[in-house]
Image (tube, rainbow, N blue to C red; front, side, top):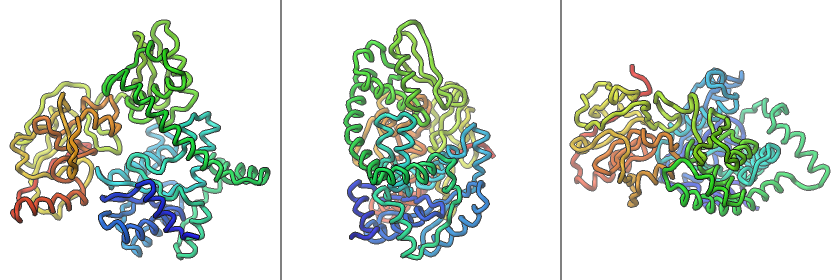
Length: 493
C-alpha cells in the first residue's frame, strides 16, 4: 500500500497543482492543515525547489482556544523551518458590520489574507479531504443544487488548490499520530447544529449502517463523473454566451435565450452573472429558477432581488445583472482580496508617472486613490503587498497611470504570451462592472502593471523579485539600475 505522502504527490502531479512561485498553506492548527503543511514541505523540498513555501494562520477572535492554536502553529512552523504569517481579525465584528454570517465572514477574510501573502503569481493550499468533499456535495443536494453543486470541491479553483481530496480523514489522523504531529482540536467540529457536522456525525453513519455502503466514497465518485460532463456543458454555454455578447456586453437578448434548451439557458445566465459580479457565491437553485422565469416572460420591465445586493433585470427585451447598494461600489475603493484599484463615480485623465512628486502621497485626480511614488533607497525596507509595484527607473520616462483603452495588451513577466487586456481581464474574472475603472500603469498600449493581478516589468513579491534580479544581471552585466516604488494606500495617513 502506498504511503500518504506518495498518494498526495501522485494526486498533485495528476492534477498539475504545483508550479514555481509562492505557495501559501492555510493552517488552523487542526490535524488536516498541520498534516498538509508537513506533506507539502516534504514534497517541495524533494521535487519543487522553485517553490517558496510559507504558512498563513488567522486568529479569528472567536474561540477561547485561539491563542493556543496560534502558538501551536508557530512552534510547528519553527520546527519545519517554514515562514509564518499571522493575522488577528475580529471576525464577529466584521460579520456584524457587513451583515454576513460568521462562516461567510471568516471565509472571505481568510482568502483575502492568503491572497495578500501569495501575491500575483502565488498559490494557496487548503486541507479539504474526501469527507469534506462528500459533506459539501450532500449539503448542495439538499439545497437543490444543479450539476455544478454535484461537482463539489475542485482539485484546483483559480489559485486555490486542494491536495488532500484524495485522502480520508482517518488516513490524515493516522499520519499525524505516526509522525508525532501535535494538533489542536476544535470543539465546534462536534456541534451538530452546523449542517456539515450534522451530515458527518448523524446522516452518513446512518446511511452506512442501513445500506452497508460508504456514502463518502459514493458521493466522491459521483462528483468525479459529474465534473467531466459539467465541464463539457460549460464549454457549450461559454461558446453560446460569446456568440451572443462577445467579451464585453453585459446583457443578452431574450429572443436568443428563448431558442436555447432550458438547461443551456440556465448555464448561459449563470456565466453572465459571473462575468458581471466575478462570482455567484450564495446564489442558489431557487434564485436561478426565478432568473429563468424572469427571462421567459416578455411583458414590460421587471427585476428580482438576488443575495449579496444584486439584481437580475429584464429591460428592453434583454436580460442583465446589476449590483445594488454597497455592491454597486459607486464611490470607489479596492476590490477586497485583489488589490485592484477602482476609483468610481467621476471622469479623469491619464497622468504621466514622471509627473508625480517624489515621496509625497497624492490622489489620482482627487479621487479615492491615494498613492506615492518614491525611489527605493534601501532594499531592507521592501514590504510586499498587492498594492505595491517595484520597477526600474527607466520606466518613468514614458509610463502613465490610466484606465484601459481599446487595443491594450498584457504580457506577464516571464511569459512569452501577449494577450488583449480585455480578454485577460475576462479570464482573470475581474468583475465586468469594474473593468473600465480599474487603474493600470501603461506604456503605449502595453500594460506594465495591473495592481493585484499581473505585472509585465519589475516585481511585486519576493519570488518575482528574485527572477527580476536574475534577468537584470544577465541584461546589464552587473550594472545596477535605480529602482522605483509605486504604492497605493487604502486610506491616507
